[in-house]
Image (cartoon, rainbow, N blue to C red; front, top):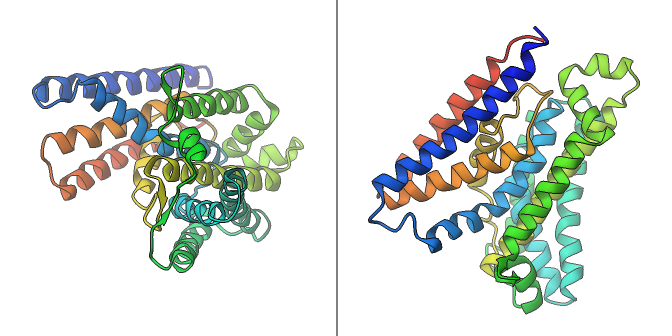
Length: 315
């Protein structure tokens, strides 16, 4: 049984990449005369998915540890609003620290409640999602907060380095760091061990409560950084940022090969899954499908991905 697990993991990874190629080919054929294959459109897909990809990397750690985070979309908006508000009076670097710190703090609160109050992460993050969303609305007074510092916008929004968009560079940096942390460090091994069998992990000396606290804090920090990228790209912060990303990010992570039940995940797979969801949204819009149809199709993809994930053989 255990010998078959790597083969199944490899097979699922190949299915993800094959699915990405098939969707790309489908839209290329169906939308060849509507601009799908233009450099501008393909570039927009990559840029638009950058914040969701960062969130997906954090969620890989959470799901791999056997937990779930439903609050990251709300944290995105709050972090962006805090960063934009601070940057009105202080240097952009202080706003950056405030935004990411806000995300990390919100994630740490989630983690502390889950780890030490022993409440299910689903219920905890569902509750904090509402609290954080309400706080973002209260702080911003339902108004958009402009971001005007040009250096911040260049670094985290529309700038380029050697012709490469800054959002792409941040995504690649997060990919490398996330993959190394997940696959090549003791922390990553402990995360997978906790998700695979928390009791066995505890017996082996792994501090399970600290891992749960750490992964949810990491997810919050990733959401905070995603809020920074949103604010840099659209040059403003609003309470609606990230509110539509919950289903997209979860779908990207699960489609990318991370088990919903914990114990296994893939940072590169999350990147492919995020790009796949972005390409799907883009293609459906170019095909003229309404928002309701787009939501139904994405929901179907989530359902199929969860079903495949839960059919993983017992270990």
